[in-house]
Image 1: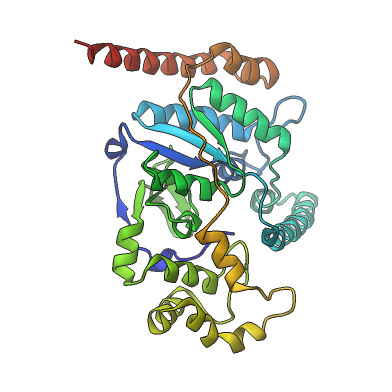
Image 2: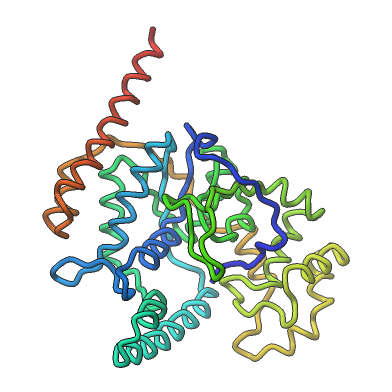
Length: 345
């Protein structure tokens, strides 16, 4: 679901060359769900091996990351830990949405409606524990650093940017800004085009800088967190009735202090159903001081045998195609070694 503030957030298009040599911390769950949603067959069925095990996420991990590494980008994937209890509402909503999508998908199958099957199948995706562990194993074998967050992955990623371990968070969501990420990069993708209602549009990486966001909107981070809560976050999906991003911005600029901001919308908050009501102070605290750790990460060498074991031996990927990607990884590793040697002379 995520935070819907795209319309008011300043951004700038950048090229991959501008990211060369920079470390980007990728929101793993956000990215894996993206792979599962987009890497599909014509009728919407995910890629699978002969045992009907989904492999869309593994395909995405291999090809997208080899391409990004080839651009000189250093990657760290951060995985969610135990979510706050408040996120249970979001999980319940997502579960209900999946159930509805499953019903409509089955109807589309009966009617042989290929477009309907494609549309609803992408809403039925589930990321299992086995898929998560296998993803971690593949990423490490590719020389990509993997971090397990104690809580929210985006909070941990944002923390890394604040202590300057990484340059930016890589995610399509905006939550990391509320967690205090210095930089957020969206559209970190292989594809240069995406399909829209009006046809195809170009995709380029976009950089969103927290300092620029705050300066442009003329607010501080406390007020940004309040704005997010008013619009609706994963902790209070419905937000405050009748308040979109522009109205929320007006309110935080008018009342300035969190207590006064939420005092001003008290009547609207009371109009929410009992299950949708929320304690804004509790949510504010989750964004302002999230649970993170001080773990360091390291970039290990690639392990071709492990890559082939997962992709070729277990999931029946084309050995020739996997070998080509491994060759690219080895070449990148050798170039890196050569550069390190040259520094000594």
